[in-house]
Length: 620
Image (cartoon, rainbow, N blue to C red; front, side, top):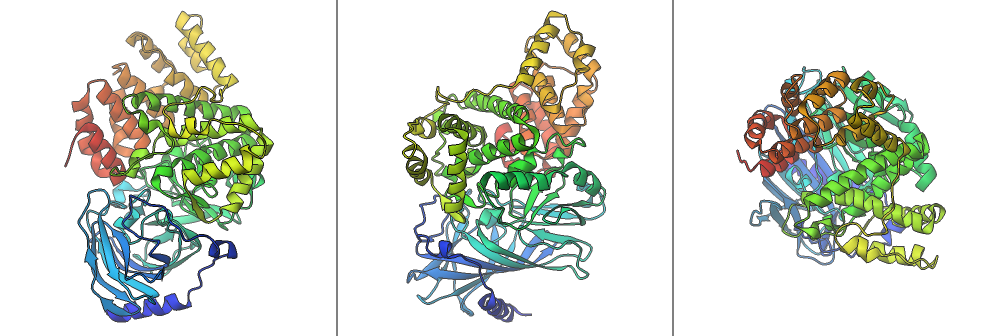
């Protein structure tokens, strides 16, 4: 089918697509915030529905096809999209070809794609293909997958990478529905953040629909030799064949998590909650794509000890996907709320002490992050100013753990019942909309603080550096027992073998390893490793924190150097690998870090690569 005929077909299809909107959505203000990370001008002309028709070419490692939009405008003469490292072939408006223009290329933002429109224009279509510089896509060869039989493709859109594989108005406040047709090799399955297949098609052609309006960074695609296994009628898992049973066991509590979340803050509105476990190069622990969370295999520990990550991504179904930060300066509204919600889910399922252990680890992460920003205190504000910077710079413990601490302190100030009533109302009232920090503060004052005659130092938390003095104190009885054991071990009244024999859960072991004294001798470090076998740990979280300590202590016994290099070669989770490369740098072992990184770099996603390139001061 030639391009013009294909475009006409797409536009006809768009005309019969019904985008589900509620009266609540239709009545919302059409006032969009200023987003310095997007060229789009949604107050003038905005996309409301996307019809994506693409083919995945594994031989050339590109995606090519058409992105067609239903648009609304206020008598605008043009509509502006974001594009980065894309080849734009043709644009049409209501079926007629028009000339387009691309703006100056910015290394972070890419280019503006401007298309002239008439005041009555309804449909815009863009024919395009990706390039080898497309940052959102990672094509993996069979050896980089679990089964090592077929290639794999994954996308990662957050924060502003969707524009690198789809020309789109790439601002989180531009919510749109979408339908998609995706053609892949017939041996593979395609799944998206939409209504998904449970079995492979015979011809490699797949159709998708996302009826609820979502932000562009949540449009996601994975293609591989995947299978599906149900956990409950509305939950299940995708993975490669060799991993599906392990994954199914690991995430068996998913339906319980959904029930716990609904009991807290209202109905789960996305119909289905599935998780796909991706190859190890996936750069994050998880990504909350609606209906289809992307997850790293590093959480498949065999004992369900790291599944708080799944609770976190589920919580995003409310805080992030349902009510979304309007700009990336407001990122804490996504992540701080989600960590708070995650802890409440974990408390509901496994008890307050378990949730406090997780929160205590987060508090330690926050302290470390605050220390790393001692020379740029503005980076520790909850509300950020990231103009001219990559929004990825704001994705750290400040948004997550300071944001959580703000909400936990607020809960302890007003009481849990009032806090829960407020949050449930917040999610319900602002469903399918976006939120700025200023709008949230106004709502918080009106609906919680003033109603209950409570004062709270909001500005200190949101616009000032560090953590205010009234921050909630997080106490874990089990962690206190770990600290007592450390003291006895240091004094010699507790042997290495007695220490390692203690019935500690994963979080307690993490707390112990993190608190190994900096002054411990190599001999003591070695006998501890001999007793506990930390250097050969199969739990990825334990391995990561132990390897960091090994680098800090210049420890080389028990083949730990080989284990560290193998870990960095096979794990692509940015948090884990950046922790170890940072430890190398801190220990004046930069050349060792660069040697390993040069070999490992091809296995990492661009999100991880950009971080480590900058950290180690390298370019390739």
